Image 1: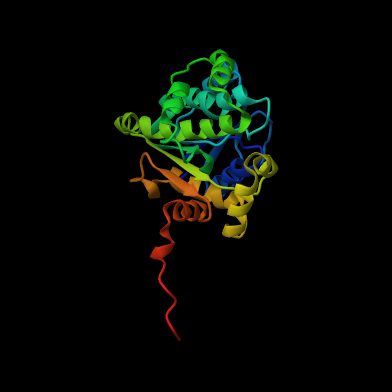
Image 2: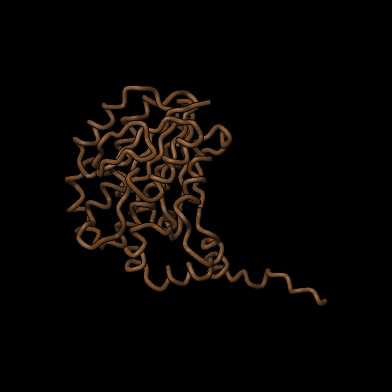
Length: 267
């Protein structure tokens, strides 16, 4: 059955792959981005998640019921953009979702694109909650200064907040007949991969080497499409790592799980 899905960040990378995949499945796609595009979508609406008025205008422009929303748009870690990172990746995304929730039909699904970089959200919960308590982008510069946040930490914190927020509103969404999940890609072969290599350095290089390669945008998009579909109807409030095994490697290393491996049997 054809459905109408909203996807942010459709001008490239995972968002473009997801939009094209959904269209190929017969769905109608409303695409949002700061850069205009017509590829793989049925309708384009401009959206700048760093600008509250743009967020409000984009949400107001949606005049049809939605069956799904994928919050994919985001910024990579870049020096000097700390406040903007937190606004675009979390505060702006949260506001956009809040404004669109009433447009979502019963049974609708929301997918938030987080990151493996947000995996330590429980360890950093106090800071995550302080960010979550903010309601205005004008509060962010002081928050960044007070918390001594650099670009890499701003990116990680923004994705930690996305994962925590997904869990926090799950019960409310269920009461409204909606589902909400997040996905956490590891390294993905897109145009911003170099930004992550600079930010995360040897750790990222090592993880990619152990996995064999970075993910393709299509591989991540396919997981998002599944979570948007009725086939995933009993998945609610979870975060799925789409990382080629990187989380498993890191968990094994940190917990010393090597002893759990079975010895190779003799021929």
